[in-house]
Image 1 (cartoon, rainbow, N blue to C red):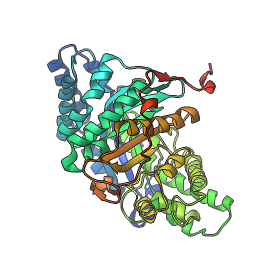
Image 2 (cartoon, helix red, strand yellow):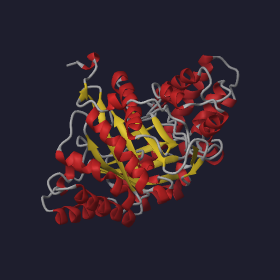
Image 3 (cartoon, rainbow, N blue to C red):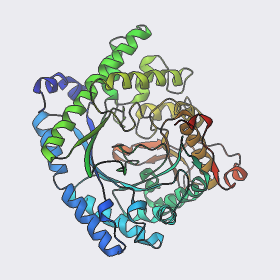
Image 4 (tube, rainbow, N blue to C red):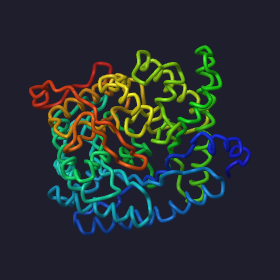
Length: 454
């Protein structure tokens, strides 16, 4: 049971400092739904999701009401659909029918997003993988709540550059098909290196094949809490700074642990992991960039930013792992542009460039996240951006990702409005020099030498 004393201890953080549980994500295995008949497959998928998740949203709402802990999102992740649909799908359009089924199921149970319209192709693509990837633009245009991800690289296998090249085209096609919504479809598509099997955050969540039939994963947040704590030790030495972040991360993660245990008990579903990432929102005061400024920077992007972010990420993990037996997912600090008002302010001030964001991804939780770029950006340029970010993940044995949004019809200096948690963003310039000859080479970038451990 949730300890009411621990809940009361966090009351101030919740009411004054934007602390929330960002998501309860129910992972559901669809492996037992596999069928060679497409209609039967869709029926099994719909029945499995609506049965397994029917109490997810009511349970989350009951916990919120009873303990006063905001749970912003209730979500579902499923087995990568390229694996589930491979036997029944004979073309990309067949996969789109599954996307519609997933969307229908998400609406039925009331979750805000469903992740797992995914393919894992770090070493090569099956025909089913190819069909699913080619179906992504139509699938995301035809659905509201379905999120898609593709893992194109890992430290153990290298980077599948054929998939990287294809995804440059796919991202532009997705942007074009959703241009009436400022290319919003691209906000629901993320490209990974070293994607974790237990990530509760969208758009990259999927239910890994090593997971149980169903599992509860919880993602906590709290940039505002950390920022507030640091204001009380302003000007102190690095030891004091680090201790403050660790202690605060412990309290934030403890809230997620308590909610996860209670949700697991009520739903009768095993608890999986806590993802203790600091996930910002567009709300004032709920910003990772503001934490970096409190550490001592004029703006995120100033000299020292990468070091400050590395410090923050490390201390969050050190504090958080003491608050939960099972820490997983991504964990650390996210740096999305559109979802973080401080990052937006830094871009507008000219302090934060695309290249500096890439450098920051070497030490943060994920990668180039929710960045709006000009709609006329070439597909090969997008592929080159993906390749660079995948290389950072591969070499550094960490998860990296790319979620860029080429906004059709808009260019540098204009602003795009996504709404809700997705926020808004100034369109950032990207390097226009060509990488065509590099991207159009065939095959795979080999795994780094330090991957050979056995």
